[in-house]
Image 1 (cartoon, rainbow over the protein chains, first blue to last red):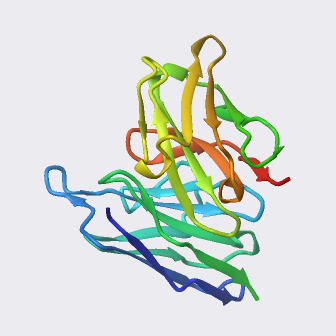
Image 2 (image 1 turned 90 degrees about the vertical axis):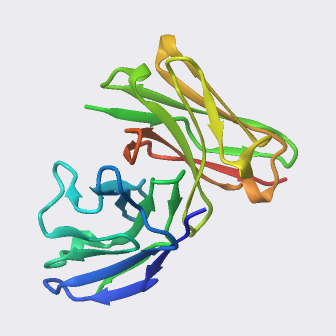
Length: 112
Length: 117
């Protein structure tokens, strides 16, 4: 099983600041045949279900603000929020779908 | 609009069973597998299993084999998850999620199952 490790587990920033959070997989999620990283990011706001933000590691889902950017390849991935807004308060999960499905433990984003 | 509408919260006694539903709308129900995902309080996400609504084929996370049974009713575009022999460890929020055959692009609002005497 591929394990997903996210860091930090939580962080607090002021509105307008840039945020980066990390997701590392225990094995590469890059599929050599198509050179795609089988990695997605979800946002889960308090009391809500997860919402798809990013798939294929860097493709933004339709309707997701462009302040959200996914990057990385192989085993190391990053979700960046260029200018945090109050509504970005949430837990962010990474998800590998190369080999079955596993999720990271989440990064909780708090707004100061 | 694509939606997955889940059934309401359940309070069940230890040892009992429960059936959670997920009604799909806004797309062709048989074109996408439906996954079920467990989120224990304050914790991360685990996939339970999935069902192919077209032919009823299923696959389960080894951890949930014998615990969960997935079915569908194509006539009403509804997926079901039956959980048996419930214990406190089964208290959680359960989501259905549409599978693009890769990532999960649409999620239900979740059904809270509480196991308590």
